[in-house]
Length: 167
Length: 250
Figure 1: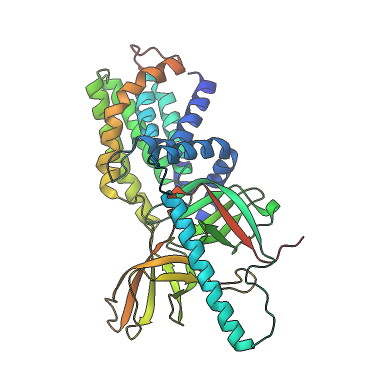
Figure 2: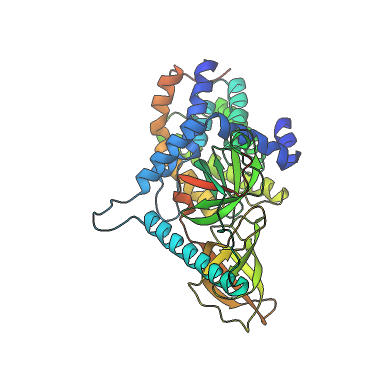
């Protein structure tokens, strides 16, 4: 893993996720993709398990830090947990085809959003302005465009996409 | 995982410092991406019309001038000849760019690129398109957090239209606010202006903050109104604001 490239990559994705994804938001519900979710699945699929676990928590931290005024922790826990599970699942089931990758993004986004909602509820806060958008809209949009972003991500990270992360 | 639970259980005032630091460190790329985002959402303008933002700004300016004129009339009547200082005379307006805007059901806040170094302090009122949009809630040396009037924890004293009654307006998230405890004997029209009340040392005159969009009987107490207010400017589309410093030190 090229960690310097990873840090730059995550910082760029975090800044883009903070505001610029609004440019490609669709419908009156302002459904936008979650770049950090896409990267979570990308690294879980193409990195070693140990690295994927560390990356999942870092991405969760990034996801928490961009929402000013919200409670920190729910996304670290949920992204970390489901990123770890996905990395272990990838040791058993190879997620190589684009439809499978889309499905992985959608399911991970859906489950992570549920856990975020629950943990935010424990803090007495509402995690998302619109629950349905967070549970279905954002994961679906991310699942549609996610696999297409895997190739440029792999190019930037110097990861060979035909390699398995089986360590 | 442990770190996640530590963050979860840590008081939000402490964890917010991480978010604040992120906004401060990356304010330049965040501002650029916000400007791009706003530009993409702005529709094509025509030559013979003004933009919605410009229209709002002018309308709010007109409402403020009308209100100040009304106050001056009252002053003249009361004091009959005594000289009085203009409401915002001596006040300093600090212009600030919006770094990030968070508008949701639970948080309605802005991060701006001015802080203690520019004379900002907690409690100061913030103008957007000539209307009150919130108050400074947190200040660091170079950035500040603005709690919008629509934030669930926001409470400011306001007056509706020509009524001579002041009430607290509480934010209710999702770009809206509510005024309660107003007896139904008062006639309140939809579209009436809502003015933030003057506050010694922070706001020298009443300034428009919103308009009444709905007025219905309170579910809990039918003898009172439940008034819904919307801000008079599109806060999400603002790329700069002005902070009112009533008594600048220099």
